[in-house]
Length: 125
Image (tube, rainbow, N blue to C red; front, side, top):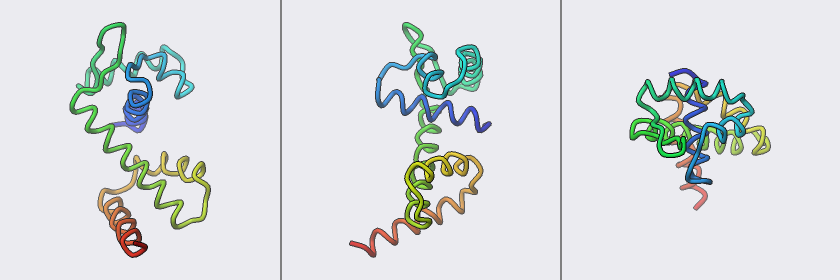
């Protein structure tokens, strides 16, 4: 899956948490993209089985789409925490960097980061 599609899924999940009902225009506003660009991307996600359209144009993540979006969000949040713990950067910078890294980080590396965070947290308790 392309990085842009992953960003759309993650954005839809975050917007659903805040607003419950999400439409294409909400995604466009959140990402700063044009409505036609978002509409095209939503069509691709529907074709890939990641998304359905409900009443009033509501965007609904499928089971597969929700699973993927949650995994992406976990990667984003974990990498953000790791960067803040290890590099002394602000949350804003850590989130910007995590957004870039989450799409390319090897799964084994990600698991190592999760293990590191868990060990540090257990040690600090």
